[in-house]
Length: 356
Image (cartoon, rainbow, N blue to C red):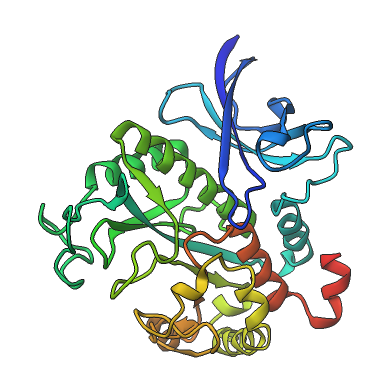
């Protein structure tokens, strides 16, 4: 019998941007496991997480994704949960349940997704590495830079990357970003046969990677923010570029035609996507700093100022994926993924039947 510490992690009801909560439960297990069904439901006080009122506050945590806990160590677990009402129905703040439904409805198209999560490290009220007064040198030398005068926070970034790998998260890279103190990690397809890059799994992994970033930041006295424009002025904002493909897009015979059809569908529903792509998105999508303006839809090959970028190697090979550059760093990956599935994979006449 194993006595394990299981950290139950869920997404709260904060508005306009949901945040993570967690608490630890000691659980006896017969053997090491990653099966969510081996972990019991657990209740919590929803009135303290903006998800219920005080006179009727009990909500349910339903385990849905279990990974190894890289901080506590062997035979301890990170348990990502959906939030349910007492009757077992998804809580209104539970965005994952809708994505699960959409993924099942579009499974025949075998959609894959990947997220490029940008974030900014802060030391108190100041971005990490910034002078106490004034500003650092203009952006330019910091992107993928090296050296104590160009990158700040690498110790935490490297620790976070190893923790993600140890946990089993589908991390496939990290890099310093354009603004000093700003970084990015990517989660998604890695070419490993035993892994699946379906939207639900990758979105789950991104939420757990975010939790690990915040948790490890506690040990360093550093906080990570996902605000899409953490510093005003001539600095890049923080996004969550989203790479998306279907089987038809990845097929050399149908790839570019399927990608072009997807781009046309995305243009028609541009405003619907913008509405769920993160709070304060207008501060980032200004038409400057490698973004298209929020009110415009632009697409192009190799175009980093577009709403949708088709990577040049994809255009050359005639198949692959598209990159949606609109989501802000603080966007809920479940909502981003659901919108892409709904727009690209579900025909207009099927929308109501699938989404309702």
